[in-house]
Image (tube, rainbow, N blue to C red; front, side, top):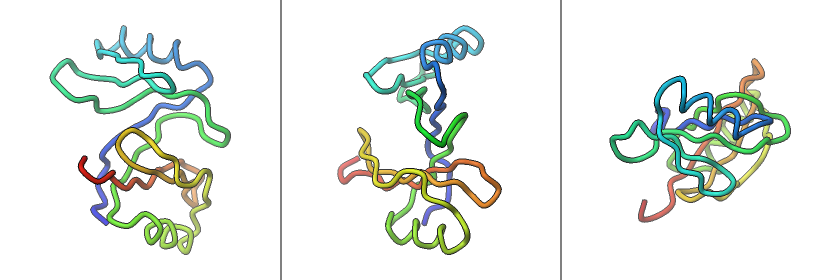
Length: 115
């Protein structure tokens, strides 16, 4: 497991309002791709996204890149994390969303081959 934050999703009840707020407040660029809007700082690749609502999650969700998703999820649940949603396919890989023992959301993410 590389154990570094590689991405952030902001998941909430009104993606359009959140995206507008972040863009106006911080000057971030946006690129709506359907179920999410990528956020950019104007210097290349996106660094985060605003997303449509997801049951059991609200707020910023950090992604940690892992070498093997199933092993990382098993390790996290053995240490009292709770699975919220499993094996979600995204444009760059697959993620499982968890709630840590304190109730905060976190995503474990496996990069797609060739990315």
